[in-house]
Length: 414
Image (cartoon, rainbow, N blue to C red; front, side):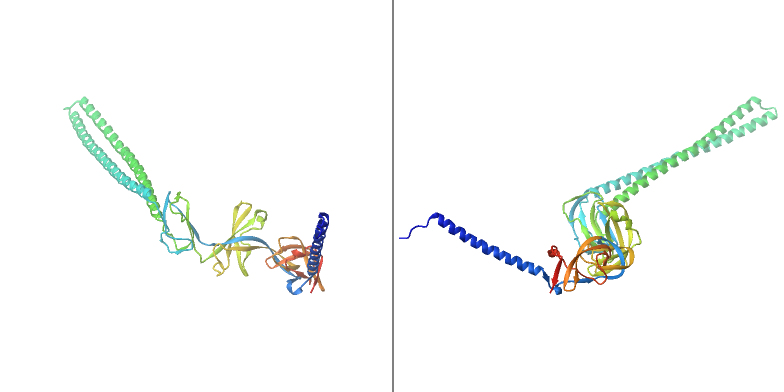
């Protein structure tokens, strides 16, 4: 019968087994690390992309981000405070002038317009009554003046008769003085009536002008209400493509709120932004290059906003080919503002590695190996970057992402 193995011996055997396994794993890790290190110590030359340092001219640029926008874009606002009942169009629809975009609740607007139409009738009748009253009053005053003129002429005749009788001794001086006083009084009253008539004409003419002016202002309000009601039918004011529309049925909209945007997508411009610290480089008329994939478009800065928003200055670019087939509304593009020309400088092909002027680390080909160097780069354009120091003309520089080799100073080529 076998004797049981003591517990102490079993523990020793277990520890020996664990030690052997750990040793094997450590050896395996060491082999893997050696393999990785050997693979890192060399790299296939065919897998690398090289750029050769040459000497030439650089038109230095300042890069910015931009969006393709329509050169003709119409913002359509709600003419009234209302509620969206129905929507007839959607984003991307190409429509003609007069096409109804959506339906607003027009009950309040129609009620207001009808009320103004009724008020118009009342005001027209008031103007008519005022004119008739004026004509009647002035006609009565004319009649009274004619009566006063006839009375004045009668008194003048009596005065002449009394003066004649007095001259032949048949009349009296007292009678003549009475007639003269009556004539003078009648003349003063007649003159007063004429002046009163003239003043009354001026007053009534002024009142009528005020009433007519008030009526004309009211008619303008009525026309504005009619136009609001017509605009509230939401017809498209011109041909174009819908780039935005509020399609929330039942939503409340305030007067003046953005309802839709209609754009002409046959011609485009670029709306761009640049950090305010670089704003001195923005000026209307400056040449600009716009990159769309591999396509290059040219243009000029046409407008620069006066104020900064969010630390950026907005500006517009007019393109030499505003209808280029690669342009799409809302597309993001790279913008390069031509800054200055530097001639006979060392330069390297531009790429994703470039993040602005400063110090970089590149692997440079030296015979059968590539060696890590510190390089000082300057300004750039969309094709080239200026080499300030660290490289010579003819050097071949690796443009691949070499982040996995940051710890190595040189790598063999195979």
